[in-house]
Image (tube, rainbow, N blue to C red; front, side):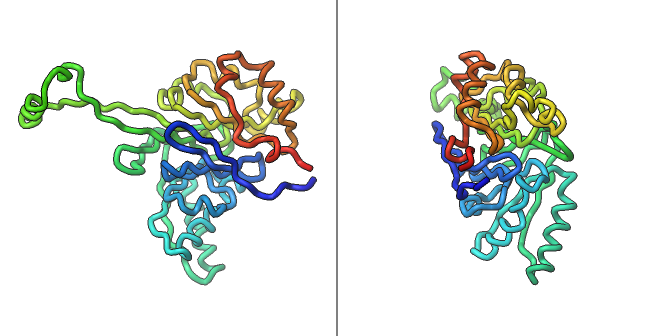
Length: 287
């Protein structure tokens, strides 16, 4: 099999774009430039280096191999401040990895890991945070939602004019309420679960969802490796209110025409209408 040259695919949404590459077992790296994050790091392509936050879901090589190169190249190019959020259980091993690379290279690369656990929030910038949540894959794994935090005037104060609002503020009255708007959610690799129970996942505008297997005889492989099979999608998407669902991590052996046909057979029209693939036919199918 001849592998096509590496190329990132781009999808544009209302307020941000997704730029990435995701082939099962080969490489997954997905940048969201407007939000300054890269979900997983693959082999750290050039586009990922500009992102100040790496959100690492788990330690498998096709998702994490580029982490040392990411920090080394940022140092080489004079780019300060990069951080990698990762499952807390992986951080000691990641530190060991960076120490080993410093011996190989002959100098240490400045780096920073942030240990994350299920339910933890991390502020990316003012009014923008990332929330970690547990996923069902092999070893220590997390998914991430990027959430826009907004403060809106409470309903009982909507009729007030500016002087009235200022007067309340001077008295120390809390006049706003906090609202969360989930923008994008990324699972990494996972088996099916009741993710619709998580509001920040259920209402996220864009869902980046692994769907590795489509062949009907690969259901057992999906279960063994804790991956999603196309047959899992109806249950997984039930109750989800996402505007867009982007399927990623498809195997290279998958014929995209067959994948789309199976989706049409498997999903209701309201679910199917929200589905797209990150990688098109030219990225997935071999020569």
